[in-house]
Picture 1 (spheres, rainbow, N blue to C red):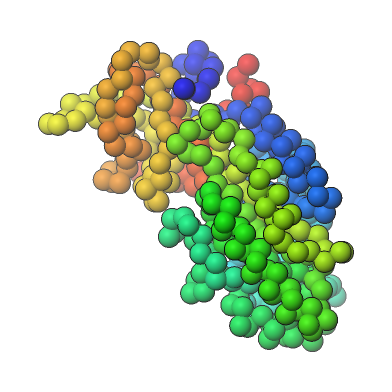
Picture 2: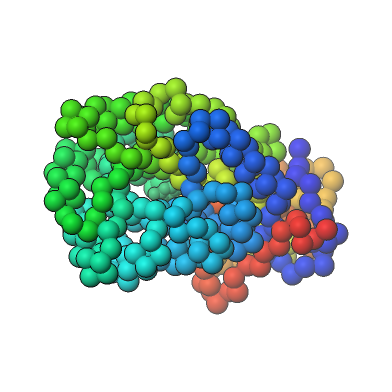
Length: 386
Ligand SMILES: *Cc1c(COP(=O)(O)O)cnc(C)c1O
């Protein structure tokens, strides 16, 4: 089954471009709000790094989600899109003084702190402004997510986070500082996680850590479990809205929150992944010795995931119903890794046909580059093309 697209409108537009189905995005957001809402104290922050297109950000902000930012630029983009500063969390291993000052000026909800040197700098900069920074520690739970090595972040030897054995020490340091307030524990074990067992393992680990803190009479205000819920790249239409009911229920069943604690999530891919497609035109169909190539006008500069992570994206010829043939779908960039798919069955392709590269709403447009002096891709929403 192919997706449905306004193909006649597409023919009037210069390719390649990103197309966002805003109805699907709104349905996804509605499901998130109703499923998380069942538990009363669940707060979802959208991970801006997945897609910071202003049109997408403003729809997400309308739904009431907060924002999870990993740079000063993302904080500015979130504020510009209207996210309340009180719902912004700020993570990242290398926050600069300038970024910390920006976050202090906006009085964001919380800094997710990843090292003692960072804690010291936040304390100093907050003191200079006569402020108190709210902080959570990002703890490395040593839980391995069953996903691609480049997107696993929760193992012990990793640049992210603070190891569990250092937790007591960093908390003691924070408690003796005057300009930081220790409020929470933060975790994020990786991305594109399809196995709920990985999240259960995280819950069990957090329960253990909470017991240890409780023994010291410490109860944090909030727990932040990060993001990571995956999407079905193989079948974008089968479950266009990811399994949020099961996801939140997993946390409800397995994580023991103390009565006053709130639970925070930072979801990126699962919010925006399925609503975006990269639309590209076939420039040439080239016969090789044993295969044929569909050479398209989009490249790894527009969507880098296949080249960077060997990621699979479903490709559809949305302008042909002729019998399928096998193609290697490749871009025009001068790199051998500029391949969107090998031996892909597609309706017979001719010069000028349009392909949709599906599930490209997350880590697509935002990772585009100008390599080969190419212009950045344009974007259109379904609202704009009616
Ligand atoms: C990337 C990231 C997220 C979002 O991850 P998804 O897999 O897109 O849900 C959440 N929190 C942190 C700290 C991140 O770095």
